[in-house]
Length: 194
Image (cartoon, rainbow, N blue to C red; front, side, top):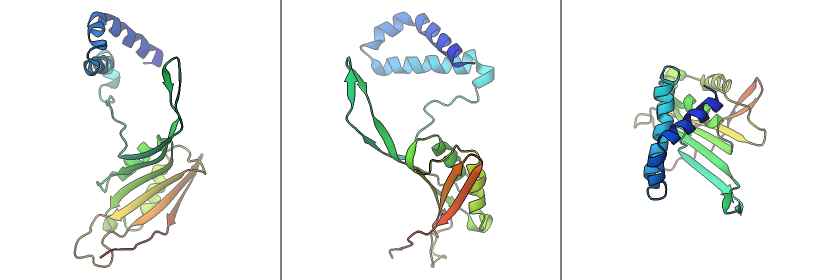
């Protein structure tokens, strides 16, 4: 389905629900939004079920933590014009087999600093963390030289048996331009408070 086909299906469905939408728009915005979301879901999961049913995810793209800055907003004829940007986008993934997924997600976010905090089983992964990060980075877009993309990996076996450094944090900075991917392990402060 093309974007134009989606828009035509959406507008057609709105007209079919016109009376109901008119009744709730000004009085019940939450119900109105729920109805509109239902129309969108219907298009993907009913009208185009064979193509999209297993690919449709509403409100999927949430980011664990963001910091953003804004300059003064303006308006034209009462419509607000925004100017803001993400300074930080941070994802934390506690599944030691799935933190690479968060790398891909953050690659779609335009932020000056993107950080994935994950965990690894150092016995299983050994010292191949950089190679794993580099392999996943093949599937993300270019990273501007002015931007920072880090992966902070912690040992997933932090218990009383590992007295030396229970978290054993390791930090990697990713750079990417075209097919050229660089993963550099960075020194970090391991100031443990005990």
